[in-house]
Length: 323
Ligand code: Q9C
Ligand code: ZN
Image 1 (cartoon, rainbow, N blue to C red):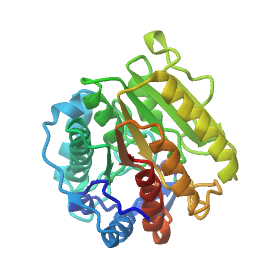
Image 2: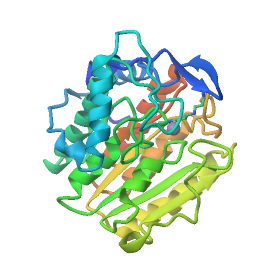
Image 3: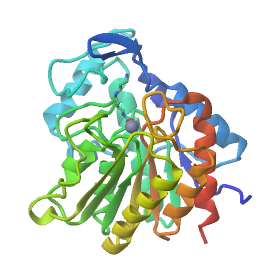
């Protein structure tokens, strides 16, 4: 097998965000989006000998390009005023009961943004593929609402940054629909959003990700949703992935941003598809075959013991198709 030469952008600042519980239908549950997710991925990647890049600091204006200033300020202020162990479920700017603010949330979310912007910058400098291993994740975060474990929309912010240079396609293969990313580009024709996800009738975010949502105004036709049934297996997923990749190809972008979730795995505790571990090699191969500069942005994936194996399989698939 080829050695993985894809740079991995990673910062330990994500440890600063560590809520102890989420609230599901009124009941406290352990927090699924925990720091150990990335510890698992990093330890496997280090065994593969990958090069780790520490993110540089970018101005907050990159976040302000897509998120309301008052929203960003709110997260910063509330975060900075909290005691170390406190878990705040604010009454404002919040779409669910899975996305609390803790004392380290703002710093971690800011670092997550820097992780993807650093990745985007490496692509501009000529790198073929970069893996931005960030948390908290981002694709559920809307213009002025946090939700689904997300605060700032990392993938969207990277896409916005790259869109100053060329056309950008976003392929979202997290188990859940990226309602935030869809919202942020719904009316634009310079950024395509294509997503494969669980049928919103039965899974979060429930209120978006339906086939009828295709964009509006000049953005009409530049959003594509592929909702899939629970239990979707490798074979079905592959055929739908190929259709989504055909949409990307037709758009003819200069850059591809992939919202990469590993919650499509058969053992994922909050997912519900049946994708196997070796299939992540195939997903990587299929995406890399587009031969575009690609930024992989970490989103979900909650079965901690196998996350490292999924990331390694996926990157081996990608690597095998890079010329
Ligand atoms: N206690 C991402 O994958 N539902 N977010 C959890 C189980 C929230 C997922 C219910 C799902 C949000 C980035
Ligand atoms: Zn997800």
